[in-house]
Image (cartoon, rainbow, N blue to C red; front, side, top):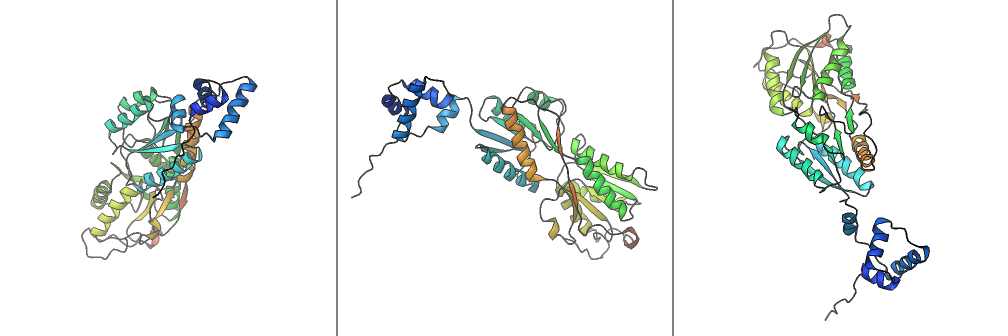
Length: 356
């Protein structure tokens, strides 16, 4: 028969008894950094070593009014960008000795407000917060009333908290310059919802690229939710145009997915019938047929810098100016020279598509 272990971890009262001080004194000394006379501190330290006392981290956190946990609020987890970002933030939080609570809002305001309330009630020490819809002021007012929060990827007007974005304008400019270098002059843009900073800035960068180039223009734009269904609907709009733009910049991978499905259904192919650059080189774009040229965000750096900004805020440092991280264009095979582009067949023709 196995004998039941009689080992019992040392408790704070054991340390107090051995050091001949009160439990409160030991607790305040170990958890809150109470300054004691050298002889008293030495007795407590000796008792801790002799008893191999391990402080209760949860109790210490509660005594300090902290949870040692931060929250990451994202619109959804299925989107590859948010999934990669969550992994990056978790790695950075772990390096700081903090846990991570991942919160998916389904891009709904009520769920966003609920997670902000968790911060107010101290269930987490701080939030890294991403939204993906416009705001009528409700979200801004709630965020402005909080301190330990960092806005990531998308802005909310009227808030003075730390903010970390990618350089969306640079991304739009890089996409436009790449398409122009291939000889295209009639460009189009399929972006996210109107009112989002990211969509407006990506279009701004695209327009900046064509400015001053003879005969070049952003001839057509479409906007809507970052969903495959919206990409499919935008493709239908593009197909119905009497004079389609020959090259398009798409604002997200979800929009790209729906667009490619519609193009395939119409019997067209990339890049023979339309050249494409997509924003956000997340997911297996290199495995598409053809591989898709894309603007890449520094997701790992997003994770590291957002946690660093939040930790600085928890230390009481002021928000500072918004931080913008550079992006890069990853060239693949979805852009063809305009001179080599074949004539558009009529929608619904039986021409075979060659992309995934």
